[in-house]
Image: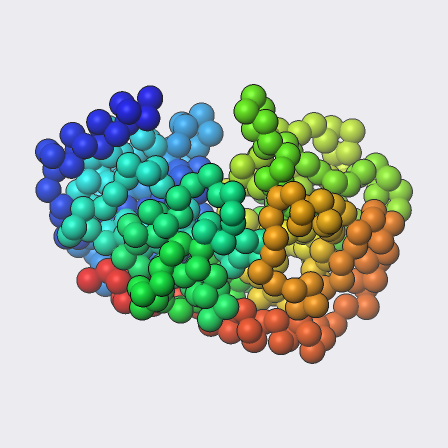
Length: 388
């Protein structure tokens, strides 16, 4: 199948000329319409400066992604389907490869197929999908993918801080090409500075969350060391939700967000008044906006969430095993902007302690080091720097 796809892309390149004012966007290998590619797209679309450009989105299975609904989002009109300067192509069809071949600009947030290489006159903008806590790419001794080859494809890479730039250069082998890393802030975080109460109310209605509940977003990452060739990565929850409900009471509701590598349907029917599975929810920013606190482990989500200056709890129940058998970390625990819980009892207490939460000096120092460039209109700032 990969050989067939490679041939399709090769044919598309041979038959297609690169067009200067075409931009191809993709998030998480076509899994959804989100992250920094979405932010860059929306700000380009709305700015009035790119009216003569064509925007293309690559998305996956139509059963997973309602193309009609997505196109409505893209067009910004409730009844407008198709046409104009916006196109959606199903992931890895010939039309998808043809538009990759003709688009002058690629805007992606994760690694692409090894055979997808931009042509000499194409510009590949890699936004990545988070500031890394755990080691990635060439900084791992057992990486299954050649991040060095991937890094050679990039024309530009987006970063929110000096720290992140250093890690991206190391992880993707960009030594000697450090100037392609643009420290602009993450466009995907623009939404965390521009929402209002009407937006919050709309998300709460969509998720059917009762008013008056304190909302916890639980977003653990995947475990590299919990993988099989048959079933892939295990969806490790790490919490006994029934026990936690007894510990913290009915005033809370949990939004459970699995990493996209392991976002399989889980049965929370017995806990429907306490846990909502939001693993398939399109844009995690909406979940940040409505939540009162974040619980995570080794995921990078806390870097973005810290922009909201709300409580963050690190539930690292398997820290020693993860560090020894999965991945080591770039960041020392002392810099994390919140308490670390190693057991569920410690987690329950940390949740209860958030009633006294006030961002302290460590939290402020964290944002100053890692998030000081985030703000509004970062998507347009990126576009003006690299899309000309």
